[in-house]
Image (cartoon, rainbow, N blue to C red; front, side, top):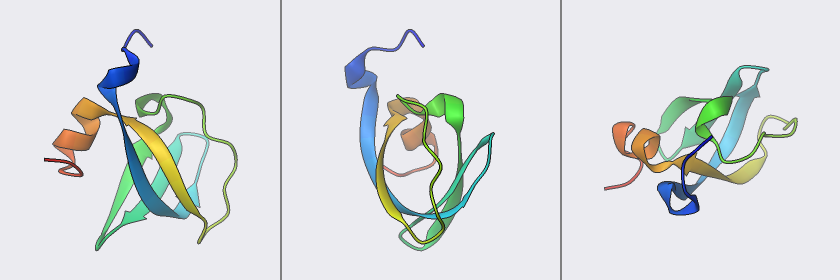
Length: 68
């Protein structure tokens, strides 16, 4: 990835399902799919129900309305 570190934002959510393509996160009242390539680091294997903080591309977080 060629993005700068300030192009990422931290988002906290609860794992619903983790696949090789990405992760389904419950954030507030929503469930979103986060593709692996929208994170600053490769995610390790997570278990459902685990609460995590992940660094997402700012543009993706804005598109999904996770930030203002």
